[in-house]
Picture (tube, rainbow, N blue to C red):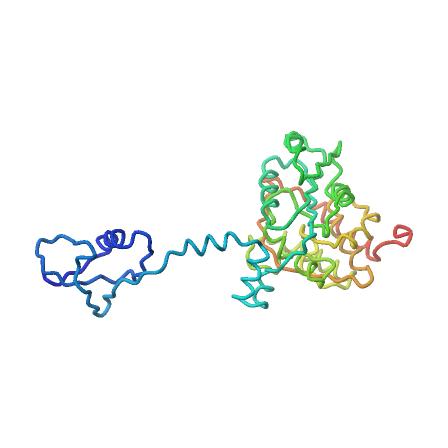
Length: 343
């Protein structure tokens, strides 16, 4: 063996473990550790017995970093408010606002209204996702006459303190389930969540931010302005855009996604329009939009969201008839809340 040795990646890994068992070693992948040795038996020696290392081009000495685990443990022990303050110091206020990092009021609760009809395959995952969204929530589940075992699953959850579970004896439609859920919601803000896996509850904090910061009364999550979404079927996308443009024509808004599930309302706003809601099926979407748009002084925001659309084979329920109904509802509710209903 030559007096000057080169150690490849496999032998270097052995030396790393022997010399620094509690440290991470940083070494470029294409570099070798070079040392001078008077031994000629071809055996690697423990690190403390190796003579001084020499550095040549593309041959670098080992550089070690402190163990990051203590700092990680300290961060884990911080409460949410302290973590947010730390992030503001590190990244700055402007960056944190863009990323949706902000402090929630101590008494803030988000009511999540979930209309359910035959969603036994996805409902449990949705509830788990809502519970893990990072926002204090009140979950209002309205079962709209399910026949696939969903009701039995909901019955088993009746003891959960964060759930309100309401049953419709027969199927009436998404709009009817939402109207029931709106009446039961008591949170500072209310958001609609479908019982499938098309929308991600991890985006709740980003959607409610304009409401929490006093900049908006209503926030829509747009599937068409985001950069992380499943590609739509062409005619499905065009149908949604057509209905949005038609709705904008009568409401004088500039939404990009009127039919989105993710609509967030300050409770006071929803309490104003809820008694006047009439639609029992998917016509509730243009009805909500038309009546909110006509409220004096209402501030409407729109934020991009991710989206994973499911197929009809996976359980999608909206159909072409609902598209024609939406057109009728856009015309029917173009003037907002009728005075008689508002009174």
